[in-house]
Image (cartoon, rainbow, N blue to C red; front, side, top):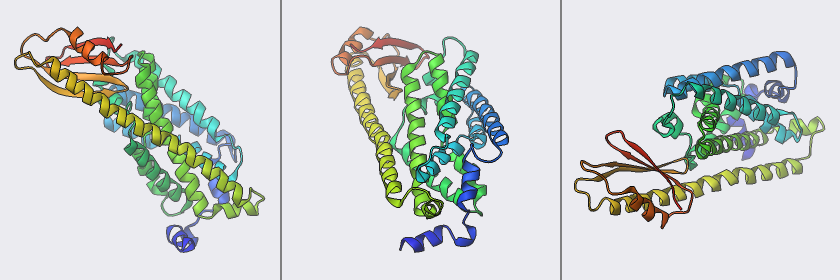
Length: 332
């Protein structure tokens, strides 16, 4: 059964050899100068493009950065290294590359006016609240990317695969948010990247194992199948961590917004014509948008209501439809 599925997914005449995969994904193999210079140059340019696109709120520009970003190469190289049970230095390239992108994002934040509403930028807000669907998307992308790497005839779809997964933009958001002093938003973007990273490595190692590349490794004196399975089991556990974390975050966000909506409704009950526009969560901050023709009740009343129902330390921001934004502080 498995053999038949493998033959359909990866026909023998389209199968790339283990040596070809290693040559493409291992930055410590072959022409090191050419590989590494291309990696760092394209990653730096991708980080600049992504940071500019995020600050300008340009989706097209951010997509352009995703297309040229080479960060997926060491990530899929990590997946292959796990199957091989070898230390290839791929993780080091991911970590150092990630730090470079964060630094570029922080530098580009100097272009922002002061003060700047980070939550008002959809490019930032959409990457600071990781969801389970983001992880599922990363898993699907990992499967597609690994299969495309293993086949000779579908390598052309890799740019499309790069578009469907967000690697560089979340790291740019981390740098921008850290430079602006918003640690909670930066943490949310970092969780999104780490979830994507682990999902890609998990999916890639599963595909490389299922497609039979472990046989090539064992023929070259690599680890036995039992060790590969142990490695795979460990990776499953590592991927489950962000899944559980994302699920808990989603439940917490739903509870947070529900309490915020109910408390705000009670707070506005005595104000004629006042209504709630939206109650959302961005990077563990509660953002309440209201519309009122008259003066609002004292905000201390709302904060007292929220403090009695929410954990301490949650930032609360109140926005009026007229453009006024009030930072109410944190719950106690």
